[in-house]
Amino acid sequence: MNQEKTEKTGEALRASLLYVTAPDESQLARIKEFISKKCAVPVDTVELELVEDKTLIGGFVLRIGTHEYDWSTKNKLDKMSRKLHGEDDFGFSDTTEYANQSKFARIDEDIAKMSAKIADFKPEDTESEIGFVTYAGDGIVRITGIEHAMYGEIVRFDSGAEGMVQDIREDYIGAILFGATDKVEEGTRVTRTGRPADVPVGDGFLGRVVDALGNPIDGKGEITASGRRPVENPAPGIVDRQKVSVPLETGILSIDSMFPIGRGQRELIIGDRQTGKTSIALDTILNQRDKDVICVYCAIGQKASTVARLVNTLEKNDALKYCIVMSAFASDSSSLQYIAPYAATAMAEYYMYHGKDVLIVYDDLSKHAVAYRALSLLLGRSPGREAYPGDVFYLHSRLLERCSRITEEKGGGSITALPIIETQSGDVSAYIPTNVISITDGQIFLESSLFNEGQRPAVNVGLSVSRVGGDAQSKAMKKASGSLRIDLAQYREMEVFTQFSSDLDLATKNQLAYGRGLMELLKQPLNKAYSMPEQVITLVAAEAKVMLLVDVPHIADFRQRMLQWFTDVHPEIVDEIRTNKVLTDELKANIIKYATEFRDDYLKTTEAQAK
Image 1 (cartoon, rainbow, N blue to C red):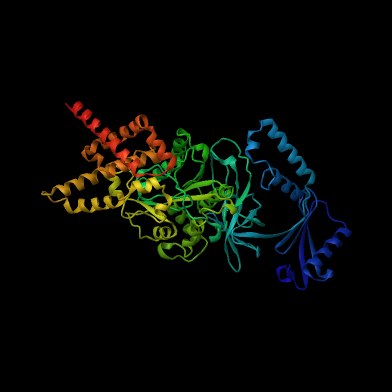
Image 2: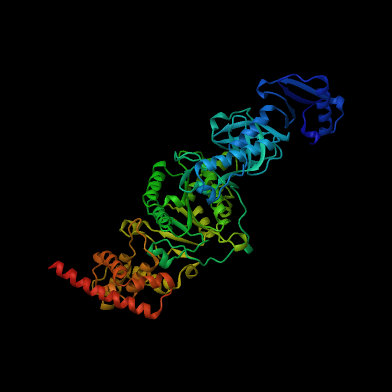
């Protein structure tokens, strides 16, 4: 401790000693000698102020300037309490073997471990750095006295609340509050914890709904954590990453065929409000059932009723068991909305470094940026473009860079990210959209006009892209999708140029009919995923123009019946695609042949019903 950090009156060094039972002369002498050694001052210059404090239960608390030495019974009991309540790792079993034990066996095991920990518990009388709140309001506090705090460090208030250091100035530090904000006021004492912000992680969180700090909010009881991970963690280095080459199938034909997503990729979902962004993410989560993929859904600034509907959908489709839902509601503080995606990523990293594949959805990062802007302005940072602080790009880049596919040496898992951004009137050139577009590996742009025309999902083929491309597709899907994207783009252009023309040649009419059929084919109901073999069969039949004779209103019904017919009558075709994931010329010819046979029968049946 430097002498400049102590309070002085003249040549004397002042310190305060809190006690329950007043110290005797020998104790006072030893305490003054301790102060003399710590501050490198003569013993006779030490002035000790004695203050009685019955709340300490026993022992002493010594305060020298902004430093505190707590030798009280209360401090030892508090440390023991935090250990028992899981703030410190108690080493509980977190494996499947532990989960499969009987309830009483688990209780006996935990009691035995707790007893051993308590028997070995030896609290150290460590030095603490303390400060005091000079301003509190809007979830922001300013603290003086703490001079060695680190960015992102947790500080604890005497009221029981915790905060995270977000601003370090010459004469004070700024922190954001997590919970119990009404109990923190000017003059509240603050203590450094020396640890970064972290969240509990483990298999116990699967099937649960938690807040941004990892606390359960679904009314299903406490969660047994396997450990804790920091919310801010360095992204894997280049040498620790693998190439993105394993498909993550969404079950959505338009995406899997034209904008494929690979495990470890970051694919942005962008569009105006109410254009189906969350629906795409939800359908992708539902399609991961029985595919050994853990899903994490992070709701940022969403209404509680919206999240409740999503959780209900997951439960109805038996998908909640492999999902973790983290929510920072619109009614929660900006601090919780800011920390939520980082905490959700920490939970996902637990599985990635244990060799699992994870899908994480950030819904949405527009509201996350707004929450960070509010905190930054309250902390007194300079506003920039659209009033966002200058480091708002780093806000999302350090988050999304943590999503990758890592090498076997590092664990072999992956995190696939689907960040969501809400645009205003389709403006993708705004500040936050352009930032996230430049960070991610592609984007799926949903267009309001397509949505209003009934095209669901309303994917704009021209503005959407996957920078991983065919590397994230099976060989069968890559060959089947062929020229689909080009054909759709040509149809959209031709549709615009010919909308006022009445005299069209036959080739143009056929091209328009083919394009309208493709657009109808890409329509997909909610929660209705198509398997990879079903998508391949559909695309092969479409490219061969098998459906050209089918009226557009009947295409959806035709596809559904055709796929069911293939499953019932020609299961060998479906099995071969699913097993080999390769589309040979012979297999393609058989698909076209059988699809044509089914079409002819379908048209005869339709005509007979019409008569």
